[in-house]
Amino acid sequence: MTRKTGRDSEDKELIKRFAEGDEDAFKRIFKKYYTPMVLFASGYLHDKDRAESIVQDVFVALWDKRFVSVIGSVKGYLVVAVRNKCHNELKRQGIMKKYEKSFEEEPYVLPEYPDGEYMKRITAAIEELPPKRREIFKLNRIEGLRYKEIAKELSISPKTVEVQIGQALKFLRERLMPLKKQLLG
Image (cartoon, rainbow, N blue to C red; front, side, top):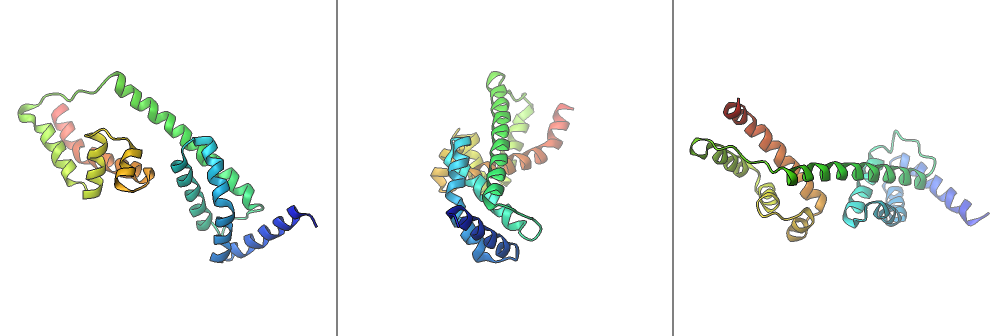
């Protein structure tokens, strides 16, 4: 029996146990494949933090699908899942860069309203954010720190910063939409 066949049979046994909900089997799969998958993702993204985040997301999805998914090869499944997530991330980054570049080229200037009403409402809406989200938002949008810089300063992951900024922007859009319609409409 070749060494590869031994690995294949070990993986098949792990898959079988994993599909039955065996946490130990999942831990062994994670331990065996986490580092190689992070290295693989890093090759696409050139960002170790994002690579780790993507690989962690893939493992979470793998665990969530353990009872419904039929996996022939753990390594094959992980490679395809990580590669697809990396491609999606690269597309997302490309879209974000275009979006950011459009603001650099044509900066948005808030129209002037009587008594600075719009700015007062924006400030009030920002203050309604949960404390940690408000801090992250201000560090990014007011102080101009990048996600990695904020993550390092607050000892959190860049992905957490990204999610918090997204949630803050969604909240602010929802909160300020009626005012915008009133003032512009």
